[in-house]
Structures are given as structure tokens and as C-alpha cells.
Image (cartoon, rainbow, N blue to C red; front, side, top):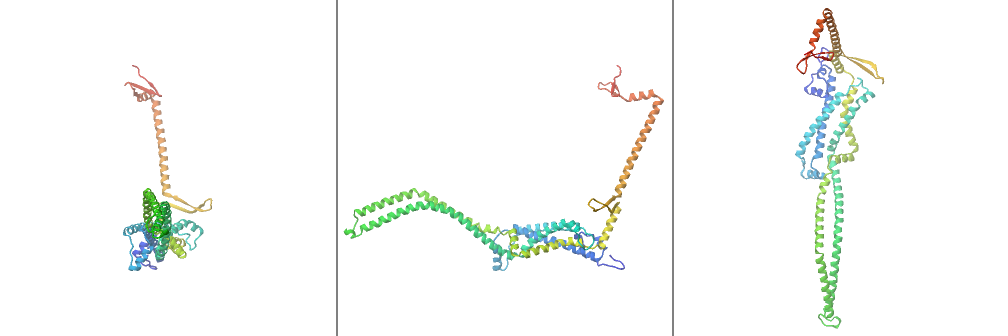
Length: 443
């Protein structure tokens, strides 16, 4: 706008883009004051920043959810040892970037709708209860958007602390899983060992008896025992025979239970193999804790106060345009906008009578008059009424004409009427219908 008393700076291309984002009318803003231009530029910047933050947060959340899982401490160890670390999984990162752009566009569009659809209040700085009540749905939507943006950003800000805490949680989960797994297999292995112990005890008893008989035989065959000479006597031979009998029983018992012993050993080896395989899953089970929900929980445990303030910060960013519009004092832009709206309504034959009546609740209502619609409706009604009058006049004139013909020559009129009513019958002859009663001509 340029006059002899005021000239505002020429808006830049970037300012015009922010106007578009905030839903402002460029034509009106160019005729408004510079302060109005700055207001809507800032409002558009906030909406755009919210969309960008939503894209980053959504992409990071997507990557956190779908990225390959592992021990959180592995990331820290790699950084310490090598000085750098790039754990990025490229396929997941590409999908996360695409999702982030889509999510950012969705939030941007919703936020833009919230800002543009929020009214300007009563034109004063005060925010009344009625204004808050009207803006409540948009405030709730803005709060939800702020929460969805703040949480991914929060876990990224505390990533190092979360990784350290998450590693402890993973170690505890590994230990607990290992204890439960070992206990489960140990109970089953004990049952096998108990079954095998019964057989082994019998064999051990046989071996003890054999060892005793061998010892007694050695004593009896030693020189000078009981005044006897060295060699095998009757007593030694009885010990030897008893020993051979016990050994034969042992061998027979072992042979009878050989297959059972082998089966127990095979089952025990299989259980040990299964136990090792289950313990190898320990790491993958603990890696499953490296998810978005667990990281959010850890962030809230580590710094609940900071977590709340970060959420409040994003809520302030998200809700600022809404409260800003409610607190706006009417300026040149608002009056010019109202003027253009009234001109458009007047051009299209729309009249609004403000505070026309009060409803049952005492709220003042407006009367909307659509003059163009009423004009067309009135014209159409008059055309229909005129057509009706013309039709009645035509019928009256025709009726009068018919009466004159009847009065002048009744017989000729009757003959003409009857001739017009002759129609062919089904047999190919002619019949005269009158008063729904066919009159057949004479043969």
C-alpha cells in the first residue's frame, strides 16, 4: 500500500509464501499495514515449523519402530572404540523419510486448517469463555498434535541416557530369561537323571560287591594268611566263584538296560542342545525391548520434569496461533476482509440483517436474505400464475366457440362428433363408441 501519508515495505517472496500458509489473503494484506503483514508472516512460519517438526518426529519414530533391533550398549561401545558410528539401516531410513514427509504434510494440512478455521474472537485482547468454548475442539486437536510431535523429539534428545538405561534393562531381561530357561530345562534333565540314577545305582552295587570279593580273594591267596601257604585255597575259590557270579549278573543287568541307558543319554544330549539354542535366543529377546514405547517410558523415568516441559513447549508452539487469533485486535486487514466479503455478498444478492431476533436461549441470530433467489422464485411463480390464467382463458374461449356451433347447427355438430368417435373393431369392421358403450353398425 502506497499513499501520500503511508508506504509499507514491499513484501518478499518468502513473506508471501508464509501468508499463503497462514491462510491470509495476499490481495488484502498488500493493502494493509506492515504490522498486519508481519502478524500473518509469523503465523505462517509457526504452521510451517510445526509441519517440519512433525515430519522429523514422524520419520524418527518410524525408524525407531522398524529399524533392526540390537543391544543398546553396542552402539555406545562402537562409538568409543572407533570414534564414529553409523548404524543406519538404509532401506528402513528411506521408508522412514517417505513416511516422515507424508506425516509432516498431514500435520501441516491439519494445522493449517485449525489456524484458518479459528475465528478472530470479539476483536479485543481478552479471551472470553465463549471464545474458549468455540475454540475448544481446535485446542484439543492441537494438543494431540503437540503430543505426537514431542515424544519422538524427546527420546532423540535423551538418546545417550536412554541407551545406557536401556542396556541395563536388557541385561536384566537377559538374566531373568536365562534363569527361567535354565530352570525349565533343569527340571526336565533332573527327571532323566533320576531315571538313570536308579539303573546306575544297581550297577554301582554290583561293582562294590565285585570289589569286595576281589579284596577277599587277594587276602586269601596271600602268603601266611591263617598259617596257610601262598596260593588259592577252597575259601579263595569260593570268593572267586561268588565274584564271577555277581559280575555275570551285572553284565546281564547292563545288557538288559543298555537300550534304556542309551535312550536316556540321547534325550539328555538333545535337551542340552535345546537349552543352548534357547540361551542363544536370549540376546534377540532382550533386543526386542529396543522399541519406541520402552524408550518413551525410560525418558519419562529419567527426567519426568524435563519431559513435561518439552511437551508443554510443543503445545505452546502448536496452540500459539489459535490463542493469537483469539487475542487479535481488529486491524485494517480485518476491516478490509469484512468489506470484501460484504461486497461479494452484495454482488450476489445476499443480505444479512444482524441481531435480527433472539432464540429460546437468548442468543441473537441473523436473518439471511437471498435476494437473487427470491427474485427468481417470484418470477417463476408469476410465470406459472400467468400460464394458469392463459390456460383458463383458452378453455373459456374454446367452450364459447363450441356453444355457438351447437346453437347454429346441432345435428351437424352431433354427426361430426360421432364420426370422430368411429374406430375399427377387432374383426376389421367399424364400431362407434359413445359413453363407453360400443354401437355396432348394421350388416
